Image (cartoon, rainbow, N blue to C red; front, side, top):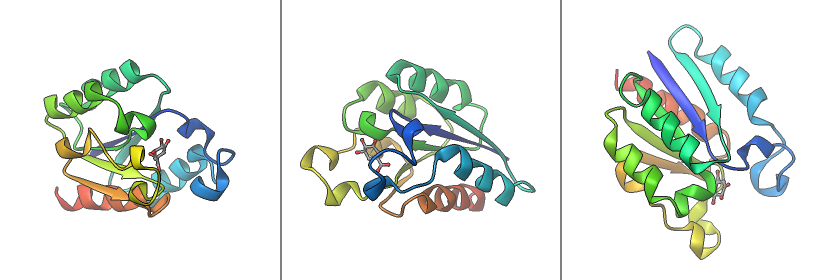
Length: 141
Ligand code: DQA
């Protein structure tokens, strides 16, 4: 089974970015933990970009062959019709994840263009959300 994690802008700064909101751990470390955790069951890949078009390219690249995508589009969640359209275009199911609870934050974060094209959304459960999304996708197989 193949699952892709795709992270959007500024998530390369996890661990040093607004640590009160996003925590102290960087994502590379967390990805290692996830890879070890699911080593027997899943081929897990990780891609991060600060650029909208690159995220669209990556969604297209994995979106017809992988079994699941865990997407944290970060700020593009709230702005990008291109990413929403890419999710609608592919056949691979996408779970949207947010580390923080976007519904408890500024109003502009409370709308997601991408959520309607995803199978579900996990928001506010910290980095644990990635693991839960993977477990959901695994259970669908
Ligand atoms: C985020 C929430 C977004 O509003 C924000 O722009 C991010 C991270 C989260 O994981 O909580 O960069 O997607």
